[in-house]
Length: 429
Image: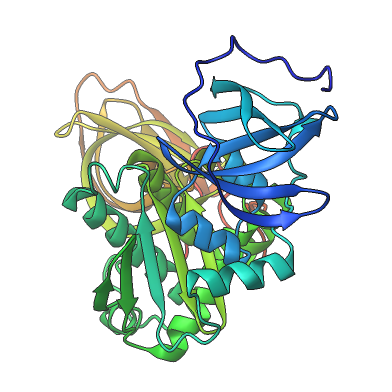
């Protein structure tokens, strides 16, 4: 065998020599499934010393096998898992050595090529064996987990997964211009109704959900984009190309879906008449690491505040304001109208102002949620106190600077210039 193999201590022989199905054969089996005490294994012949073939294998579910037959997952993505097996199988049959490898890093030479899938002829044969008909009369989802047979899948996991899938569907649907008037950044009722995913029926085996989409044409458009996302895998360049069409809000929801799959150790396979997609818990961390790190700013409304200006930089177009009631300091961009309509503003605790702030929610594809603020209006100066130590700024004589913030993903961002600030990006409604 190759000297690249650096394996742990040999395990006791736990796996029976039960070759279940040969998927690819060339001078003997090359890709096959095996039955074991731990369930079904997918194996790939990786080395041969003339007397035995060294196989690299990992547990797979029925849904992963379907995804392999449909050509939506690479062999490497099904093999590289926290627990993998290496075993030597004699040409005439019989296993002589077995290693159980936990969190083990294999050399590229030992693994299938990146992106390599089951050959098309083998996929056709496997689809026939699995009863996956070529024509799909209604879209469907398969939800699965390695724990499904022994422990089942909890209602909480299903609820969280399906809820975030619907939110992702809404976000992608919005990119096709199907959204109507919003209230404080929420999706319009029109979009929510048209993008709704409805359950038509459920099937046996892995959890099979047949869908009845509210708007079939919109469903196909959204599903095609979802399939592009899933097909990009952990390829950063491919993910970036898809994100340029979808925007950061859909990216954030996709990150949330990946996070839920990983948290609940689940897999999702979708299929419709013109396409299919597959993502799983084991793939999720790699995809999350590859996702672009931009953020979507969503206008949440306005907020009044009473207090004083800690800092005001008219050249950079930024402010800091202390709200005496909330005991919070808000910082962000200054709207151009504020600079145009106020001749002077006092900075310091001696001058009290009532102001209005624009509030923005930021959802990143890394699933963090933050808020930022922009000074929308100075309502009035409420008065000065005797110990006024404030600095009076004449805004009319101060220069202001605005610039275009480079788009985080690409052309989907508004062409309207945003204030060039360190800590807030102006969002357009």
